Image 1 (tube, rainbow, N blue to C red):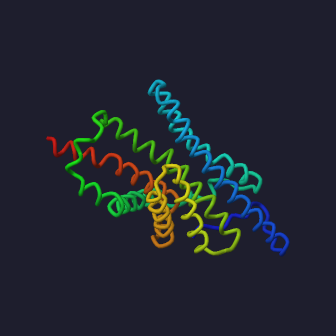
Image 2: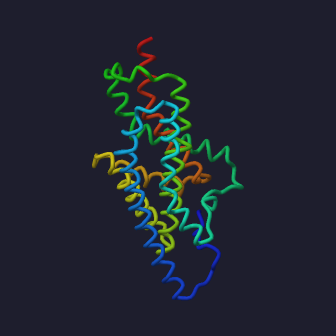
Image 3: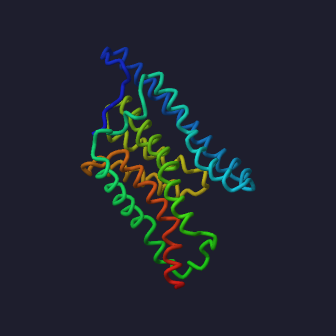
Length: 243
């Protein structure tokens, strides 16, 4: 189980606990609102603006910009004498965590994406013709080390643990972080995507709760691998069918 992070102070007085709870509520509200605004700005303004820049510049900016949602959580954690590294079990079996992550990502893909992919095989000629194996390799790197890394640290890391400071209830932390994870994707303009990503957030939490050896690292791998499969399996099947 992940520990509840209280910073460098371990006081137990009622006044201290009340302050911890009020600070936690404020931090969740501020971080959630800020992350929603940042994502809307990135998706709605920045990405359309930079699309005509040189490809290398676009790719670098697309990789770096998601980390902006971690700036405010980092500020709060510095104030509390905490670190993002506290969310990782650095002395665990990383190979096992990675394998678990890949299996979890494959399972969520089969549940949420595989069915639609295989039902729609006849539509694969519409797959973008500029996809190639190099882009697939970069895509896996991008999804794991940019998108999944930032979102998992934010929702299954900072927000999850901050909910535990309000009330030491993992149920509340699971529900709260999953709902906010779904709402975070509202910038894509689809209620279905909000519901599906909220459900995925719940499933990721349950993976960590129920699967021995499943850690935040596992969830980062699962999340990134799932996104990569959604993007590139249709292309792979299209190429196989074409040949």
